[in-house]
Amino acid sequence: MTEKRNFSRVDFRVSALLQAEGVAIKGEVTDVSLHGLYMETQERIPVGTPVEVTIYLSAAPDPIVINVKGTVARQVEGGLGCAFDKMDVESFAHLRSIISYQGGDESKVMAEFSEYVVKKMHDE
Image (tube, rainbow, N blue to C red; front, side):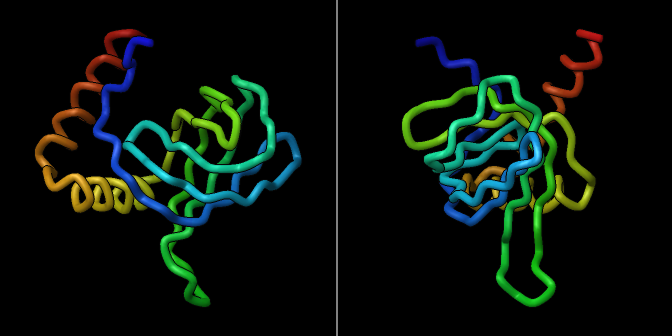
C-alpha cells in the first residue's frame, strides 16, 4: 500500500466526539496530523461521509477543544480515519502545538502545512 500522507502524524491519545448524519459517536483518537486523525470506535461510518469532530484536550468545566470538519477517509475494523477539511484558527493553533510538541519539530510541521496550502491553491 502506497503511503499518501503528507503530514507528520504523531501518537496522541485523547477522547473525541464524532458527529455524522445525526449520530454522535464517542471514541478515542490515537494519532493525529494537521490533515487528519485516526479514531478507535466500533461504529461503522461509510467512507466519504462528512463529519464534525470535537477533540477534548482537557476535562475542565470549560474544556479546551479542537473542532474540525472533515470526511471519513477510511474505515477499518476497530476504527476510522478522517481527513480534515476545515477548522477554525484556534483549533489549528492547538493542533499545531500538539504535533510540534509530540513530534519535536515545529519548523517541519509548518513547512508541511505551507506546502499543503500552496498545493491546494494550485489545484483550485
